[in-house]
Image (cartoon, rainbow, N blue to C red):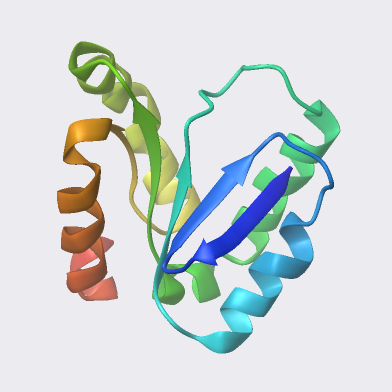
Amino acid sequence: MHIAIQEFPRIWISNASPSNWKQELEALLDQGKRFVLLTRELPGQDGADNDKEEFSQWLKDHRSRLSVCCAASLVVVSNSLIAFSLNAFVAPLSEKFGFPVRVVHEDDLDAQITAFLAASPEVANS
């Protein structure tokens, strides 16, 4: 999995090579600034399964630090019905990872990012 930080605080995650997610996320946590994780890849799409499992475990292991810095994780889709439908399935991940996890329609992306970054960590995780 690859992390692109050029659009900070928008942090894009993809299945592209090279795999750099661990060092990039650790550096982001060390900075202590709020960010939003973004992807266009739905769970279950092709990719390195071992990398995804390690990534998921890393998120759980770093839950307390992420709950302060990560404002949300958003899966961006092009269909509003799909976004609405999938939110019921991803909502439980919010509790697991310590930050909101949502599926959003691409037309709502800017507003969602702004809202999550503006919310305090306590409000976002309640």
